Image (cartoon, rainbow, N blue to C red; front, side, top):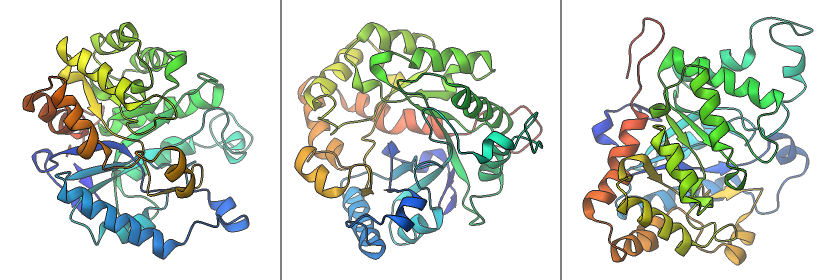
Length: 328
């Protein structure tokens, strides 16, 4: 398994938050319309202090799913990773719910400029060689569908992610719009493109209380991301906990992962807004509030170990590849 510090064994990952962000930005806006709450040095100190508190709470690994489209800057996050005990995992992919930038409209097979698909080249290079010349290799692929569904450009991203997965064995995680139940469309798409459901995390499933839909995804072999604890402006944590407990009672402990989709800074929902409107939306919420609620609702230590340790380790371990190569 690849981390910011290099390769580690799956057994060393420990308690893992599999869907988080360190910093979310936007390079053009950051340059031309700087956010008044963003100060890089202070943000790095905030992240270091937050990850050290998280370590003291028992968390050992955080997967940073900040990919292109969300202001990914691995060199900046490395400044954090070098100062914390935590394992940080970088990701590759492209975050768009509808269209890609103009560059991708002219570059690629059959397009004006032509050449190979730069998305596939990017994803594979990030995984096999390292991201943006840092040597830090991605350990997860990230794609998005939202209300718009699988648009032509989203389909292109998903196709490149499926191909990169088959070449590298790196797992795929997704952003979904749970009310639209488009995790079902993601699952069907990836199965058609040769991706085993067991290598997929269908994300943001905790945003719905529709147990039938969640069972459908898990029964097909996918893992569901109950990964937005603290986003109580979308769904209260009590409802999220109740859903996890109901599925645990039905024997689905091996098909769920827990996380927050939180960030130490995001210009989309900056710290001042979060403090007022989503005060529990941070990476300590599961350890401090959610685990005690799960235990009081009947979750066992074995359940928690499965959700927070075994399932992430299984997913993050690189799987079979479609060419000769060396797995992690």
